[in-house]
Image (tube, rainbow, N blue to C red; front, side, top):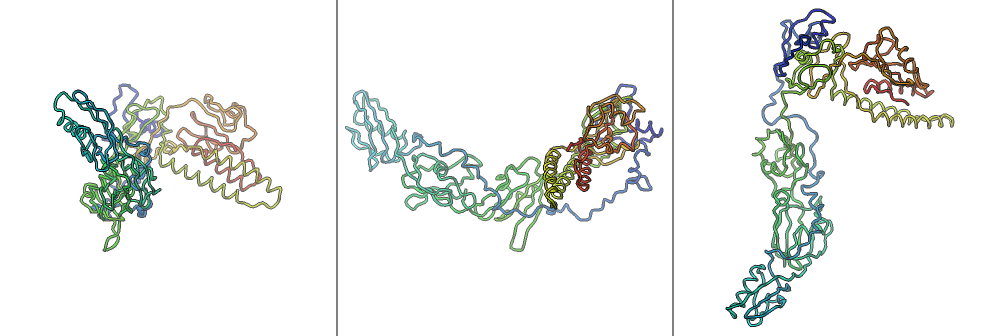
Length: 577
């Protein structure tokens, strides 16, 4: 039997059929006492209020504006200044490039004066010597004369030496060459870097090795896209570090002693945020780029559906909202802000069920589904289910409870701790109470609200609209009573009809010295909290004895008592002061 039918049979004896949810999983049960759900019109008064005279739900679906024109969208926070974001590549010089000095043995290394080449020959010609490359770029081979090797790779040198020796000794000669070592170089690093200076390395060291020694690029002013290598007042290489950051490719100029690496001033930039893997300031080559190029730079998260483009143009401020497929052809200019968003609203919500029921625990429902529709589709064991105690745990309620509690605690701290004292005695009392309040605030701040939304009351269930992530609790019938809070022995005991609240408290050892016997709460299975004076006990209830506010200040005591109640309602915990 389903929840609403079981509840209705216990209270009103009549029911009417309501359409079941089309998107919910079909439930099948073989047990004779598990039936499909129906909903009574007397249980859900809110449903009647939403219907007109024809019995159909009245909805005004006339749009106030055409929001589907392609460039309109929701209001977002103020535009972000690109200068407030870290530049793309800001973490580039945290990888330890300065600890990866080259050894000069790269096969593409070009020989220059000062290098040393080992030449060995055996057979008809015996020779074993380390030959320096002189200022003219030559090595001298006895019997062959000078041989120019400047600008050659190690493989090319091997071929040149072999040809020179075999031209004199054509038969029975073996030749072996090896680049013995390279001359170190000193390279200047200047421009917009953290620590300009002269840094040592080898000709084959990476550009990043020298930049890392200089502390990296100035994040506020330096360019990651305009890095020049200057030799004798001539630019021999221009490096765009975005190629390395995105694709792993970087120019590898061979440095010479006295070369200069110049970091130019940062060029025009745009701010990119929203649903991207990294929010950064992206530098432009020129003053603009296409939307497709920006998408490639930003590396979007999955599910991105829209783009907000804001900036200034010659004819005034610009703010346009595009679907992602239309953004590729747009032009982004210097100073613009681009926000990517997953703004494709799902028409389906997912709701979870817990407690006493048959069938699956999760349901995919239409976005406008109501609680009655879900309960109509859930079968429950008739003799085990407390249908009158259905409740919902909702994330938005939890956030509201947490915010309300935080505001109350802040108000308590501000109001009381800032109050003046008229006498020394009063000042000492306030110091003691201040410590007590600070400790109470610290402990209360750590509590997590339950987010419980009470929907069942007095034999009726409110037919509220469900939200994505809701957890619908259908509790089992309980035979216990829980006594907690300011009692000597907090415990659970068997429910006995006719026993009063005081009877259960005495069975738990009675009140503690800190108990406030005028403030006892009853927490129902559905999350409702009521004063013990006004209710009849039911199986599954919890008796919560509140602590008394330990202060003679009536205003403070009243405030503390109010917050204690608020904590108890939100968390089902009595916080002891």
